[in-house]
Image 1 (cartoon, rainbow, N blue to C red):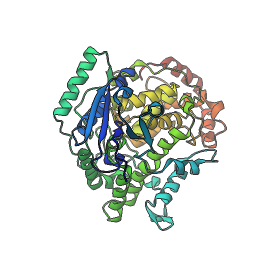
Image 2: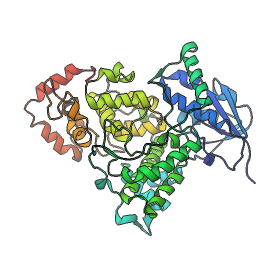
Image 3: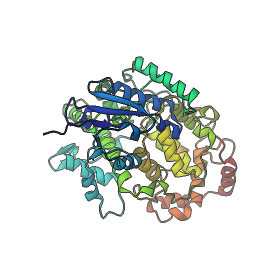
Image 4: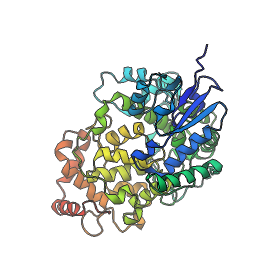
Amino acid sequence: MADMRRRWLFADQLGPHFLDEPGQSVLLIESKAVFRRRAFHRQKAHLILSALRHRAEDDNVRLIRADTYAEAVTDEVTVCHPTSRAARDLVKRMKNVEMLPPRGFVTDPQDFVAWARGRDHLRLEDFYRYARRHHDVLMDGDEPTGNRWNFDADNREPPPQSLDIPTPPAIVEDDIDEQVRVDLDRWEREDGITFVGNDGPRLFPATRKEALARLRHFLTHRLPTFGPYEDAMLAGDPLMAHSMLSPAINLGLLDPVEVIERAERAYRENKAPLASVEGFVRQILGWRDFVWHLYWYFEPDYRAANELTARHELPKWFTSLDADAVEARCLSDVLAGVRDRGWVHHIPRLMVLGNYAMQRGWRPGAVADWFHRSFVDGYEWVMTANVIGMSQFADGGRMSSKPYASGGAYINRMSDYCGGCRYDPKVRVGDHACPYTAGYWSFLARNESRLEGNHRMRQPLQGLHRLSDLDALLDQEKSRGSHAP
């Protein structure tokens, strides 16, 4: 017989797959204290509150507004394993709460641990192949569909001049969104709660109905074009063919299993090419599950890792999302995207924002916290391995084989930013020196002794000593300091 005790749902567990049966009674808690601790993006706060309050409109749902979670849970409830250590530890301390295994991910924790045990380095490609086999995704018998595990080589096209694809269906705000906005204004005015970034309108789904509409639109209109240009950037088209489903999946409005199944069906029914479907599946079955499991598999103090001894604090122009203070066109445009939308796709995150932070030696933990607070799809579990391990290489290579550092040549090849910029990606010293090109060589010089044992960095480090103007470059970058480029 099913246990039909009330199910407490955190704000990232709002979909039906977090319940045992349709109609199970639900407890939701809206805690203002969460927003007092740190300055989150205004649109992130709006999206979470809107999603909670829309879910509270359903039958058998009780929403309690309280300062803390503990004071709101007075009856016996069950809850699915939370997505942060702090929330998990809180649940463990509450005597009237039974914690169930996690949901909202594809691979079970015990299966990941069995796969990871005994490995010196954990790599996405190895886990991804395991997950494909284990869950029979894009497999034809024992072989990967198309006889290739990944189609990365087909999915690295530079951007076209434009992409002629329909925009996603617009979100239509309602009375709930209006009240959320009134409440956030009051919190700022009366409670001293602060936010970063610009206010709405709301751009991402807050209901399962909205999320399903976005999923259908992506599979029909955007997935076929997604693959080739998934690593490209266009100044005039920040969305390109990306799904923008991560906020909905991370709120629990969509089950990643259903998303993967529908994407594979699109390929099987000849509605999307294999390279695009594989690239999309890799993001969810591969990368999303991978960083979730690493969050729990790595020790609690992994977030403090700093193998490259990066100690500089994030400058105010960056933390306040002051894109207008930045002259470098790529960084200014991407930072404006964070300010205006609370979202940019994965390449601007990694190769513009993260790359710049690593080149400048900013504290990895502070960078991870910034990503957590500033992105609508950002959570602690999302950003810990993504930023500490991959973006900042602060773990010394435990989950990524080399630093994702690059100069302006990469940005020039994969975007249309450099043509309209005052800086030249080919120039590393002088008034027109690209901050990414100069920053790349400065990063290598600063970390040469720490990276010389990495075989993938051997060639770049050899190139470092062939620079005739290295001393001038290092003086230039030292004087740049924390100033906006």
